[in-house]
Image (cartoon, rainbow, N blue to C red):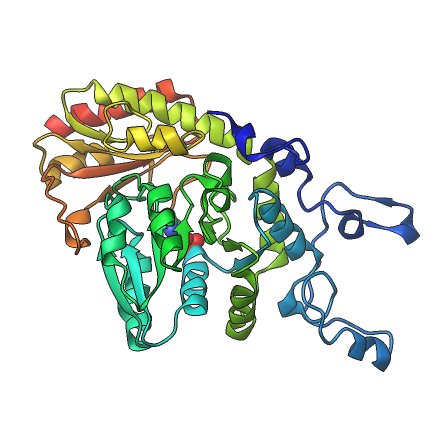
Length: 404
Ligand SMILES: *Cc1c(COP(=O)(O)O)cnc(C)c1O
């Protein structure tokens, strides 16, 4: 599939956008100094100083790209938001949050009111569920969890109170691929908004707004940052939804550090090449695992045998490096021996960094709309930028240790 299909001749293509995004002359240079720097400098600020009272009053309604007060951002923050907006054809703007979870919570609070009904995918990231079951429930928003494979059947779950359908595809623990176009069509038909957790794919592999999603969210902590040293989240939205998100975000008081924005911008510049390598390395490892006797199932939508493969081929422009597999007939102790024996995979939450990671995961206790019946223990890998031959040799040592 071609990445060009979302970009007409007027628009620069994604790899170029990643290089140029956010580097506006007014953010990278000062005419009085006679030049500019490549990267938007780090503008640390709480207080902004005005020339005089008229200047202060004149900027009272400043929103995006005029300095007003630190919480409203500085050029470093605007540069990151601008660069993310540029990656998403059809976007009006991007808001930044101190974490991915904060972005999800702010988006849900912005779009839902007491008495509203939310349809939440059953494969969602666990803290997303926790926000729905906790704070949203306390504020009178009812959540119904739905089967990630529901497709057009979502129409049957929409009630007059349904205001939002939340999607995550592929699910970041279990990797089901949702039929996003079918769900979007049903939602639009009934005037329901859609919000997607697009952390796995990023707009490089799934331009969400071009596919009809209203709000797309990323944990920038993962692939955008890419170096496991900063946390942030983003919401990018269409023009219709944007004012509600911006107002709620101001009211909630979210602000992000300009230093962290500079780190995120640095990550963004190399996102295209890193994603390509994460995806290719991941596929090599996944294909090798699929041929091993110790493995029952590889949960990777880019493998032809995967249940989400056909939809993934239809909708996605490539693969990232996060996937899972199950250990055939193994027990908890064997899984632990396997993981503990790995030398090149750090044991840790998060993913999307340059270094490979492994975690055990147990989805059975999390689901409510669907049952996770696979009794073989699940392992999740985030494949980094190491040589995949070294990773494969490491996994082979893990299998040897499992027997022990
Ligand atoms: C990590 C993650 C989040 C939350 O992001 P944080 O930056 O850790 O708060 C949300 N969704 C998915 C799919 C994630 O993996």
